[in-house]
Amino acid sequence: MLVIFLLLSYLLESGKILFATWIVILFIFVMVVLSLYTLITGTIIGTKTTRRIRAFDRKRWGKTKWKLLNITEVVLYSGMGVGLIYLVFNTDFDFDFHFHDRSLSTFTFPFIGSWVGYNLGEIIRIFGLKEQAANG
Image (cartoon, rainbow, N blue to C red; front, side, top):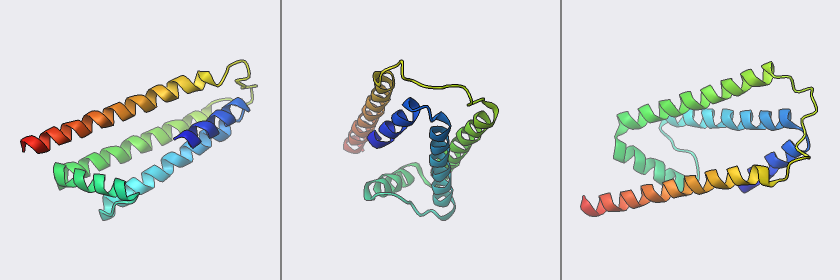
């Protein structure tokens, strides 16, 4: 996440917002393809930890709910990608779009906030699983 943040910050500060947007669209496209592959074949792609978590989720939720959640994931990723592509083709990027008057902290605080929020959410879910396992 840090590398992606630094890359996008550099691209935005250097005025290459269109290039940064296409990188995000490419990333979303890869996520859609991986999610579709997992949905169709049932094979989970990712690191060892990711595979274990997704296998646990599939076992915990059941095959039907797991499939429904994966379909929802594919639809949301696809919607985000289509929305971004629509913005790319309907936005005028010819103007001088630079962030030189802003410091890097303009991008840093929202990034750190979302990262901390995501990690706190994961920690809460992990504690919930531990309590559920202890009670079950």
